[in-house]
Length: 272
Image (cartoon, rainbow, N blue to C red; front, side):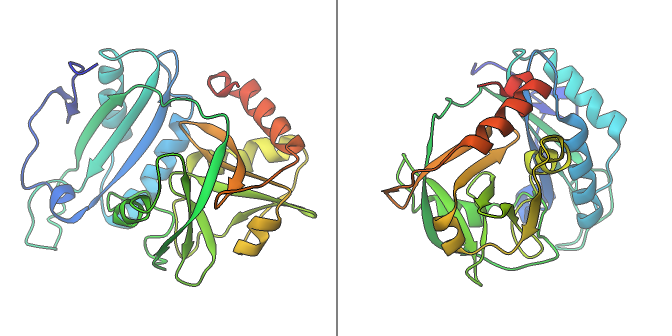
């Protein structure tokens, strides 16, 4: 796999401009996408989020150009795996002031991660800052996640709270919490990433199953009291949480099984 090309602005193993604003300021966005049989099943959802981020950060995007890059890269890579698409605000400009030029586009391939049968969560001490201007975006500045991950042993995933002690997300995915009166997922108006799988589940899967889900503030005590918990992202799909902070968290997984089954029916790449 080490000889697989990286694509830069459509060119295999193209050169990276050292003046790229993504390198200097984190001025960019990225999408991490599941590749299945040479197809990106959630491409439209990823593109929609990328466009929201581009509008927020002043990065102009052209769907035909980006999709051309993706198709060219997929023709050189294995049919199954993970694609990371990065777009930056281009190169140059005067210090922090953006010059308004074209974006730079990068595409990377990696194999699928090892499947996990269960997740043990640890609540990270590091707290996400509240910043409504950046909340929801999958921007390149991931230092919050880097610092949180540094606390974790290899066999734990992280649960991130914000500086107001509100539950926000997992280290690399969104969280859904099953309480007695239905499903909750944290409000991301101040912090966190608005995940593609989170959006897909809320728009397609929960309504199809007749399961209400509310976006609202979620406390750590609610997470500990939950009947069921899962993390989700656009690469791994849905993964049930079975322990928090080292203690067993026995959960009735009836709803999770139904959600996973419906997701796999619609998108077979996420089949158990």
